[in-house]
Length: 68
Image 1 (spheres, rainbow, N blue to C red):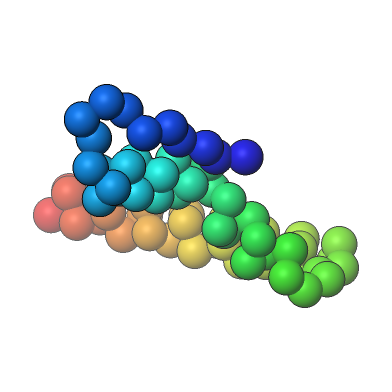
Image 2: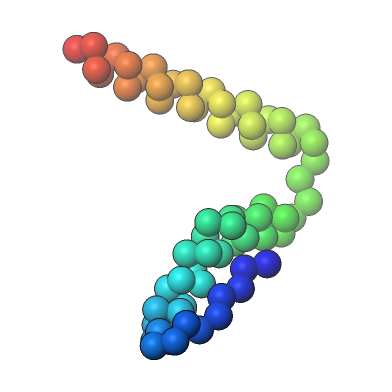
């Protein structure tokens, strides 16, 4: 769990900013969003496969653009 303590001389805004950064780096919100609904193993595999294909296509496009 992400927790922060108020440092001496630190404003509430700075504290909140530090907390948000910590939550983002811990990927807490994205994990909660993923676990909001049940997803079967086959669905997870299908999504991972699609993501991998998309990633490969992006890499190929970048390589092609660099060569030109």
